[in-house]
Image 1: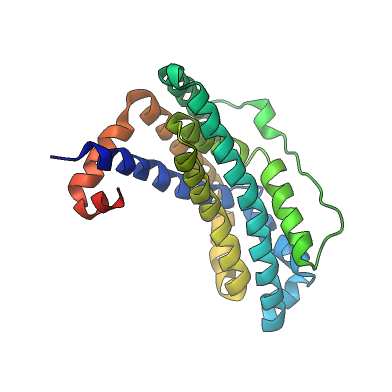
Image 2: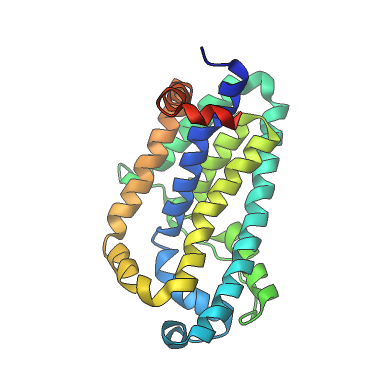
Length: 251
């Protein structure tokens, strides 16, 4: 017999897994992955050639990348807290909120899969942080700007996770979800900064398969929306606990 209290906590696990994967897909999106090397080099105040060949340059870039990830994480955690608070306020209308969020996410997913195109999602807005290359504080500011203004690649996927946070109606859980999303997006930045020469081939392969990555992102979004509409998160949570009993200790 599964304890109800444990299940309430374990019910967050599917959303956490999806949030991490969504962050990774955001990193692999067409307007993020191609600019990662020059963006990291700019933040560290080095050239891409130095990033490729110099260990000292990579150390500088890694430090800048840490502050960059801190900047974007601050924004995502704040958004997670805020959307969870909104969900808590509208707790009485939780079923309606869940339905609206699920339908919206499925529409975003259909856009990325290519069923139809939404023109406003094909426009890109980038917030500029000025000439801040080569400093930790500048990298932090760029992280803030990145989190606030990089659309459409972040917008729909991030919107799916914010929808999940709102339906949780718990500020701690919502913040955790956005922390997982920030980890999925931020950790690859740190890995590229630390191991750029070894990862060049992998990144080149990803660029060649960008269309498939975008369709995978759309399929993830559509699936998340469908699960929200049909209540499959609950079923998935039970399956996780039955298949991996040690997860019950999370509660």
